[in-house]
Length: 233
Image 1: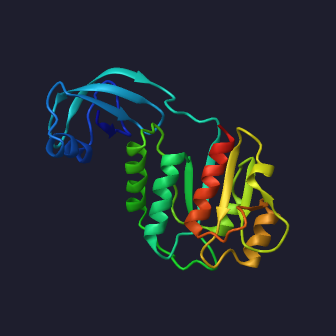
Image 2: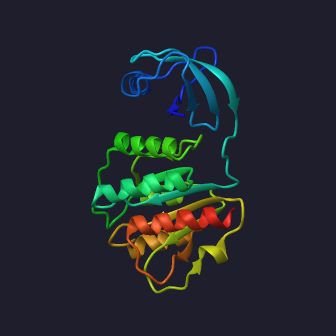
């Protein structure tokens, strides 16, 4: 069955936006009375029947719904420096959404090689991955944020910074407390600067290691995403 995204769904007046309507009625050629599934990105999963298949405004009737569909027992926020090759960042966003993530913040660091992102394009990657993996929650994708602003302004219960220096670190497995709010900082290809590491530690972030291998930025971020989700199962 086909899945559609309706972030502004009103049960009293049910229709798909123009982009989703075009895909439904023009690309997939779905007809009146065909069954579809819909998520609103806020945890609701709907089963519905098409009443008016129109490329500009496809209307439907809700047959049944489920709230909190696939809700996880923790909140994961990963802040990652955008990679020079934007396709690597897109790959991370796609896979992290499929695995399970709640919030992603691209961060601007002293060693960042990419200082501009297309937020709209990246958000479309999130939406596509959410639909593909049958998620009812749409991860929040923040605008590009300065590293210093992020580390000074957050209220996560567990805060970690991953970097390549030789200082004493702990693993996520050793540091993790179950069912908490987590924020993980992942630096650029040139790693966080000493000043950024110092600022992170001064603001309550704990140094973590992601293993002995030297990982690419996007791989390190996905490794952290997988570990937090796996340990909270």
